[in-house]
Length: 396
Ligand SMILES: *Cc1c(COP(=O)(O)O)cnc(C)c1O
Image 1 (cartoon, helix red, strand yellow):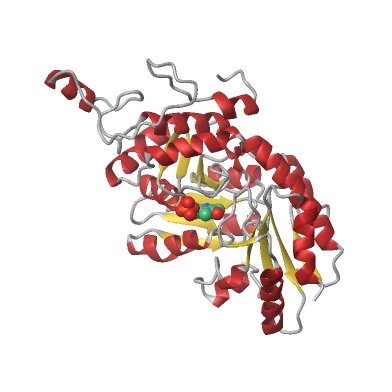
Image 2 (cartoon, rainbow, N blue to C red):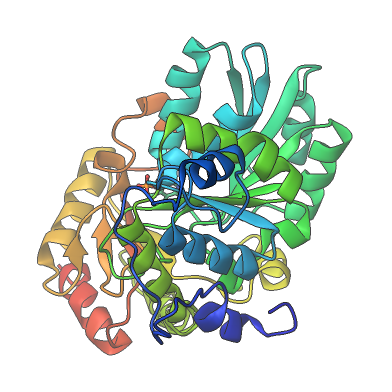
C-alpha cells in the first residue's frame, strides 16, 4: 500500500478480509481464538507475530486493522492500539523508561498528562522537568545524563503554540533521548511527526480519529524495533488494550479523516478571522492566522491550521473575565458545552474551570490559561451559523 496517497490509505490501508469476502471491515467480538489441536495451541502461544490470534488482549483482527491503517497514515512501521489516549501515553513512558530515568516535557500539554507525569510517574522514580514548548534553550538546559525522553504536543491545547519538531528532535537526538509527540490535534491528515524527527507518536483516538465523539481509544506508532521490544510487551502484559468494538468504530472514523479535517480547519480559520474583528475579544490563538507568532513554522509543518482555536474575552479583573467568558458560553445554543474535542459538532469550553482546573493556579498561569480564555473545537456546522451563535454572547 506504500505507493498510495494519504487519502487512499485513509479509506483502504490495513483492511483484512475473511473467507466471506465482506466489503466493510468485520468486527471480531471475541475474547479468545480456538485451535485445531493442543499442538496448534502451543505453537500459537509461543509466537507473537502479527496475524497470530490467541487472546484479544494480545491481538485481535479488528484491532489489527485499526493499527495497520494508523501506522500507514503516520508513515510509521508499527502501531499498538490502547484503550484511551492516556493509556497510550502511559504505555509510551512505562514501556521505555525505568526508575531513575528523567523526562523533559512541554508544559503546554493535556491536563491529565501533566498530572500523570508530575504525580504518578514520580512515585515510580521517573522525574519530569517541564519546559516552555517554544524555548529551545530550555529544552537543552533541562537535559541531564539520565534524560531518556522528550514529550510534547503541537499545536498545544488550548493556546495553539507550535513546536519546531525538527529543532527539538535534534536536541533530543543529541541527548540520546526519544522524542514522543502527541499528534492528537493535527492527526496525520495535517502533520506527520515521525517524518520530522519524532521517534514515537501517541494519539487520543477519542478525538479526531473517531471524529464523532463516540468511543475512547488511543495508539502509539513508531519503529518496529521500539514498538515490538518496548511498547507491545507493556500493553500485552499490563492490558490497557483497545476493545475490538472501539477499533472497528475508529477504523470507520478514519475513512473520513481527511475531509473532516480539511473542512473543520476551513471553518476554524473563518471563525478565527471573524473573532479578530470583535471589539470584546482580546486575542485569538490559531496557527492559520498570519498574526500567530509561529505562522511561518505552522505553514511549513502542518497542512492546515487545524480545528482548534481559542480566544480571550476582555474584562477589567480576572473575575470579570471569567463572568464574561461564562456568559458567552451560556448564550450559545448551537455549540456543545463539553470538555471533549474532535467531534463533528463544535464544542465550547472554559479551560481554566474545566480541562485545566485540576492543575495548580501557578501551573495554569505559567501555561497561559487565563480566566477570559475560551476554547472552540470547531466542527462541521456551517461557519455562518457558528458565527451567529457566538455573536449573541459577544454582543452583550
Ligand atoms: C484527550 C487528550 C488526551 C487523552 O486522551 P483520552 O482518550 O481522553 O484518554 C491526550 N492528549 C491530548 C492532546 C488530548 O486532547
